[in-house]
Each structure stands twice: as C-alpha cells, then as structure tokens.
Image (cartoon, rainbow, N blue to C red):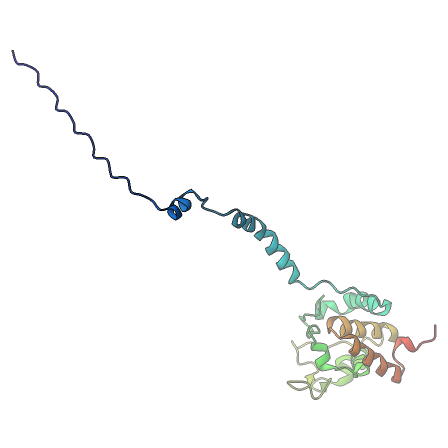
Length: 199
C-alpha cells in the first residue's frame, strides 16, 4: 500500500518593511477630507444665490400721485391693447425704456398730448411726428406695423388724456424727478398741468 503524500507547507508571506511616516503626513492622513467651513459654505450657497437673483429684479414702481395712478388705470383700458401692458410695444410703438421720451422729450409734453388727442388723423398718414432731432429721425404716422394711432379727443376728457400722458412719460418712460418737474413747469406755462387748477 502506498503511503499518502504529505502536503507541502506553504511558505509564510513576506511582510513588507514598516516605512516611517513623517508627522505632517500622519496629520494629513488623520484630517477630515472636507473642512467644516466648506460644508457650511456649500449649504448656504443656494440661499445666497436666490437672494442675489432676487436683487437683480427691479421692484415695482409705487405710484403715489393720484393723477398718474388714474393714468395707469386709463392706460390699461385704452392703450395697453396696442402698446403692451408694460409699454413694450406690439401693434403700437414701444413706450418703455425711454422710447416715449425720445419721441417727445422733456418739455414736449403738450406736443404728446396733442398727438394722443388727434392721433394719426391729426398729423396725416406719412407725416412725421415728435422730435425732429430724434435719433433715427421723426416717427412717421401710419408707418409702424401698418397701424394708425386713434385720436382720443372724442372719447376721453382733457384731464384723462393728461393722466395717461403723465403715466406713459413718468412711469413707462422712466422720468427722473427733475424731468417730471420740468414737464410740470412746461404744462403750467401752457395751462395743461393739473397742479395749476385751484382746489
């Protein structure tokens, strides 16, 4: 009978020599991988981003003058269909971002009142209106989108037209307080400003 073979004894694995690690390396190995202040900063970042984005929007203008407030209401019912709720244009020309003041600059409020009263018919299709020194030249009546500006002299009172014009110039046009004062002084001289009426 054959004798069973004895299993070979496995040699023990070789143990690597212990390498001495310097103190700074040991400290780096023990340190947390993300500092606490970084985690706190990352947690606050979305809230900061929302606040920052919110600060970029322009707050709505608060209208305190009752005549201009009435002008806003009248504008929304009579003019916004063509010129847009915010005066950004559409079928009618753009009024916002100073466009209305390029056509009828400070001191030409009465000319704008006449335009609103008479419209395209009063000027005549193909004729210019507004400031002749306007960049790009005067606007031409009836040349924008093939539409004509209606005259409001028969449907609105002089006071209502003044209120609309003030709203368009002061709020949509973005007039400064100094420009509003100059416009009101011009209106006082011609008798169209509401502040000249005795209480």
